[in-house]
Length: 336
Image (cartoon, rainbow, N blue to C red; front, top):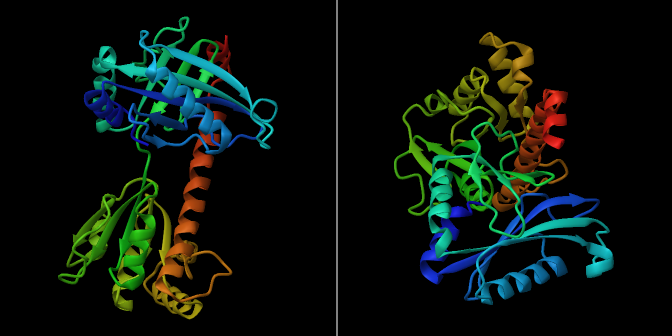
């Protein structure tokens, strides 16, 4: 969630806003560290820390904080979900509650400007119950969208950490997929060679590219990007698959079609000199196993669920790799 620009807008419109951030969890909890909810003086809010009684109580506390006339500060609470709230999760959640008013506009504007530029990290040191002043930390390592606390030090990763997905084909399934992916953390590059193949309106996370040579769009593809290939022409599909296999930055290559189509493409790619182990990277059929409907919306739901599963697995692997390579001495220093 891009939070700082919306907080800035709220300050300019309403004079103040309040935010609750999950800064730590133990045991089972509704959301992970880094989840946020922002409440405005008109009682509207955006974001979520998991719903249920925890969120309802947090909203009430933020509304009460907004109604007070005292100087903005912060409050950290550790909440046992079962004993204190009657929630069955059984875990504990640490929340930081903050109020931002016009006196903090410059700080919020600075963070909003950094957010527009891309992912960034901050470091703040808790000092009593005064404002939690965040300083941008160019050497920070906390994952984007997460929070780590080490005693009085709170480190956060901000920004919209989205995966690029190249979608080839603006047919019925492509259109259904674009709608399914609209609210999700993907930036979709939608490619089709046919004039006027795209609808007049597309979601904000979609960039339409009408390319005479669709495969060329993969040149310079983002690290870890996904590619989904479902054009109107099998020969075109094959050329895009060939290019995708020659694009080392792609983390996933999916081709719509049957096992028969896969076998035919594998044979043609082998004749073109593509190694067998490279051909094995192509996933056909696409989507979740066990869903066999050919309705475009059902295919889109199945493929979207698969994309989310693969995206999360890659993020977890990247986090594990980063933790494995983190020097032990640094952990000791940070935790001291």
